[in-house]
Image (tube, rainbow, N blue to C red):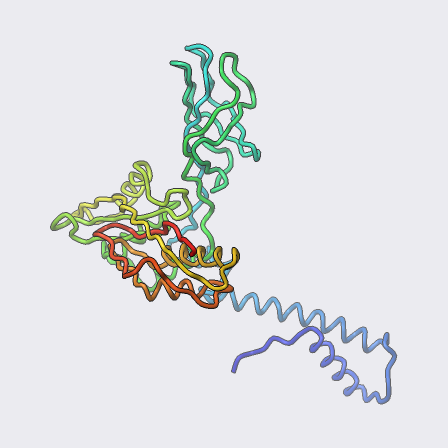
Length: 348
């Protein structure tokens, strides 16, 4: 039988009734009576203890723990993935060649986020291209191609305002839900010295990696293929540097006899056309969000996306009453190793 934690009002009433009964008091009492004050004081303290016990009970069970979750994870050798600093490049116009923009120069985005140059760079052919790293860890440092940045300390001969290339790989500290998911996977599927699920776990230990897939014997006997995505990057499919980081991490853990090849999947855009009722902006936004979440949750490289599941995702959108799915007209079947991802949705 479940225990229902009493409310503070219920505790106070119970303490008050108990005091009145044990002291043999009859008749009405004043609102500010000594017994009333004692009941509220004792009831408040009791309610606080109930809350502390409730909190302890949550921490004692792995899948409900929050504050103690990192400690539970550490017992199984799992650490919360730290935040990453976004990196990329910035281009500034140069009025003459040979002008040096020193390492440590700071460029500021319109919202106040700052980026630091990583090396001395000399201008050439009317431009200077500089590698930068965001001074703030996390996804806040990511920036689209063409984002305007301004040098805080101007350099003579160099324009103080420039534009960025794609600045990426800034990743927030791992969330509790992601850490718990990895912990439960570790408990339910213990390491087996190179079993298929080991490679998925190893890939997901790398900061920024959110999903991974393994392909045993992909290139013949003794080989293993591994692919992954980074769902919190503007482009979820990894570049050369991200692939190299995962490759190096897995190589440090894999069995000596295994040859592991880490690669990026090809995207397959899934476009939809929907007639939805009511056809309001709020419902459209909800449908779009559900489709994005559905593909992130269920799509796998080379895996079929069934129409019935797409319809179910649309029906789950808040405010949706009915709909007709016009496109896709049949199950979405990607080629091998292509990962279905959200493309667009048109409302007709």
